Image 1: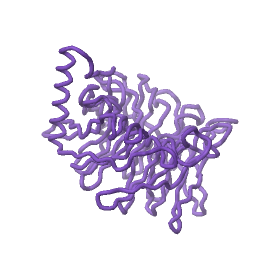
Image 2: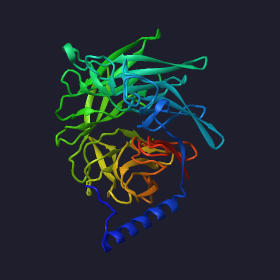
Image 3: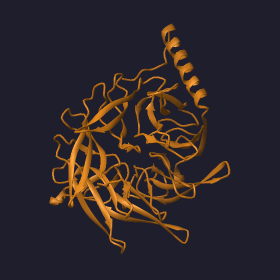
Image 4: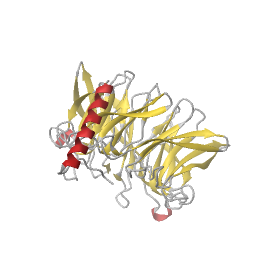
Length: 416
């Protein structure tokens, strides 16, 4: 349910005024300043950034666009990997790789940066021509030149193959350089898998399917990146299924070479939210935080917390979105900073109904939301899909899929 602040009549004007005052107050309290780092122009530049950029050790940002670039086979390009380099207060952009329909394309998820500076990501479609189930790729820089290599092409469960299909929004890398992720389809039962790719030291990788979803209590169609705790346990979400049909949060624990799944929480689709299309994050105490983009008291999504207790995980409702000034339909999992503050984006809502960047802080035991930016649908962009990243100074970075100077999305910075 979308609550619009636009319309005619005294009631609508009053609601609009109230919403405007709320957002202006929130922004003033935050002291946040919004800046566009790059406006995408389509063509070789890229179009429609769909995930937040990520930092390397030098402070450069890397991200993907779902379309655009100089590759062939798509109407306006098949997607790019781009780099943003800071020069004082300005940033310069260059495209590191353009995708074509001869391989995987439409890179949907966020990149991850390995300790040696290599980049890893997933393509949502393409790859094997008989399946077009996506792939995993690596970008490595040698003597200043970036080269993209396909690590794995997914085949779903065609021809009796138990491989996955349509990998999710990103990957996880461990200290040994192994990659973990999820695929929304395929596997033994066809309901999606959790996979691992271990490097062999000679440029090849060994794939292991460490869990096959069954569409029972565990849910199905996982799509969000995983997280790993200090003990090597994996945590993630399934978009649908579970005992109430509205998705789950799950844990995979490794013991004696065998991974065991346990369902930590099953969403009802009601006030507690439903359909968690995004993953979870861990804080230092082992609590999990995440977003569900449907459900809640206003049907506009929720932010939740799961706390481990003896025998079960306790669910806490952190914030229910109204669809109005505070945003609606969270479009990412949350990012957590060193002080325990949560950051994220919503697909709509805000002062102009074009989406928001928000911050949620725990003040004296109560969670309080602050809108850091309400998108106008103009040069600042709109529909910020994919979430935000926060640097050590508290600056927030992200991408808006639409809008901007040329209409093909922007990468932005918000300073406190």
